[in-house]
Length: 92
Image: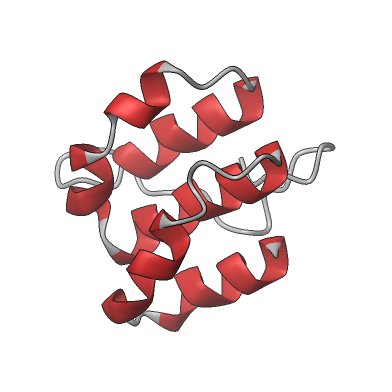
């Protein structure tokens, strides 16, 4: 699923953001992190509106993905690329 989310994020097709959004609450931190990353690439404004999900996140790698993805909103730093994978498999 992680690889599918990376493909979705790299697609540039905002219509696919809803597919990533539905996985923001997945049981797997790797999937949640990839979903956040994909949403950050496709629809960072929508992701910012969903930021309340970030408050309850218990996994540090997913919290890091939230921070990186929200940073793509104009005036902030760019999102992480899939090449910056952590040892847990989450995108950092």
